[in-house]
Amino acid sequence: MRVLILAPLHHPDELAAARAATPPGESPPLFPPSQAQHFWQRALQALGHTVGAFYRSAPALPIPPQIAGSRLVRGASQRFPRLNPDYRARNARLLDAARRFRPDALLMAGDNEVIYPDTLARLKAETGATLVYMCGTSPIVFSHANERAAAPLYDLVIANDYYHGIQWRELGARHMEALPMAACWPDFHHPYDLTDDERRAYACDVSFVGTLWPPNLYSRRVAALEALREFDLSIWSVHTVPESLRPYLRGKALGEKMLRVLCGGTITVNPHGDFMLYGGNMRLFEAAAVGAFQIADDLPGVRQWFTPGETIAVYRDPRDLRDQVAYYLTHPEERRRIAAAAQQHVYANHTYHQRMARIMGMVEELRA
Image (cartoon, rainbow, N blue to C red; front, side, top):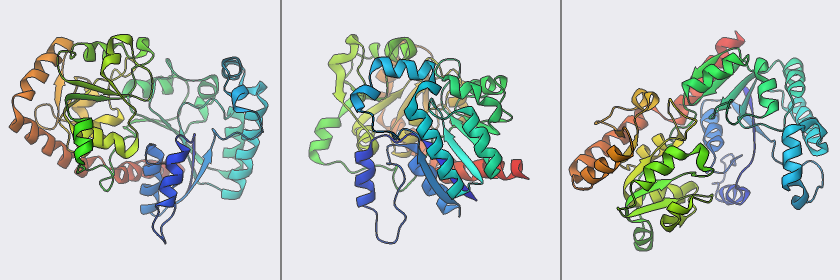
């Protein structure tokens, strides 16, 4: 099939570096390896599909960044997206791109505030494409007006969290599948040999990589990490962090650096955000794939994808997390056993190749 990925483009410098490093004869990446769409593309191509991309974040009009990114313009665009002339131009650009590409399937990443519902309806009518909405967050907490209004157009919603999928169905989506979009690509998500400088920079008892801001959406993460301040704690985040945790902030970690950070710590902790009550975030699979020993909060999805005590450790509350960190720091053989089993588990059951094969199989069923 011909598959068009509709997603924002983050970290363009990383994409440029990845394209420059592409071996001769291989297809250049459409997204940087810090984005899951990079691995969607590679898996889809390995399955024999033709893949294109539309960057909905790319400006279509020459509006100065300081104006386009201002708080006033951003707020008005979120509340009244049709009044934004650049958004209108991007929608027209998407229609032109789709007419040229003629997709059979559209894989649309969540957090869409740019593409209008009537654009999607027109695109589906003109091309006959099946629309798959790939969303990792709750429509109650995070969605934009465009996303909610377009829900009846979604032929299939792939939701990391089962409860999010139910919410999308209530908004009108035709079908839902609770399936983490995150997975691993063994050629990229694997244990890394660290340099001496990296070992010194990344070594710690406990590491955390992820978002902690705003605190009202990540209070469970903040409480979990605050309970670990007596240990050698390192926090890596591209955003700011609450004042109570700033002494532990070590910087940003994206792409391969993030994987190396996970390899450098003794234990990595993975509390989900407040809006994920079922579980299934990206770090579950990435940490396991690089051979890191991981402790996550005890959620239904964590138990669905992993087995506590065999491929992961889970905790009930911050005090329990603190006790488990203390225990596992003094039991290295158990850490190594669980981490090795977790890596084997995700390599066997949770690769991007398997994810895309399942999703495209569902698309074929819907089209039939």
